[in-house]
Length: 174
Image 1 (tube, one colour):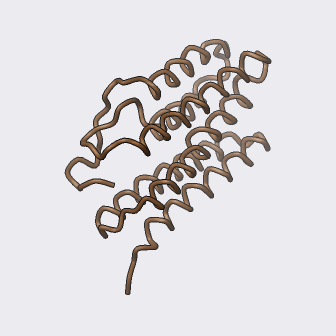
Image 2 (cartoon, helix red, strand yellow):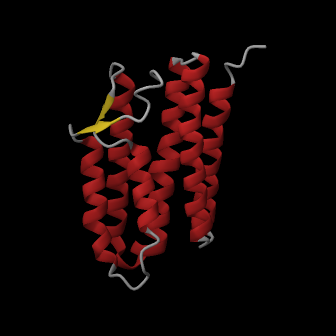
C-alpha cells in the first residue's frame, strides 16, 4: 500500500488545529488557542519527518505546508496575541500583528523558492509563531506595549538573512 498521502494528513492536521485556534481566540479561550498552536507545531514537524522517511516529498506538499503554516503560525498567533494582549492599544496592535503576518508570508514564499539546504535563511515561521503564541502566557499585568518590539523583532527575523539551523539535518531534506 502506498503511504504518500500520510504527510498531507499531518499538514491538514496543522491547518485544522490552526483554524480551531482562531475560533478559540475569538471566543476568548486563550489557553485552548495556545494548545492548538502547539498541536499544529507537532503536526508540522511530523509532516516533514514522515515525508522524508517515506521519501515522498513533493511540490504539492511544500505548497500545502506553507498554506497551513501561514494560518497556524502567522494568523492564529497574531489573533491570539492581539485579542489577549494588544486590543487596548488600538491601531498599533493591528499594525504590528498585520506586519507579523505579512513577514511570515514573505518568509514562506522565499523558502518555497529556495534550493534545499542544511539550514534556514531567516527564522522559520513555525518558530516565530510558537514564540509569539507562548509569549501570550506572560503575565496579564505586563504593559501591552512590551509586545510591540517583541513582535517587530520576530517579524524582522523571519525576513532577515540571519541563518538558523535546521533540525532535519540528519534525516534528509523535506
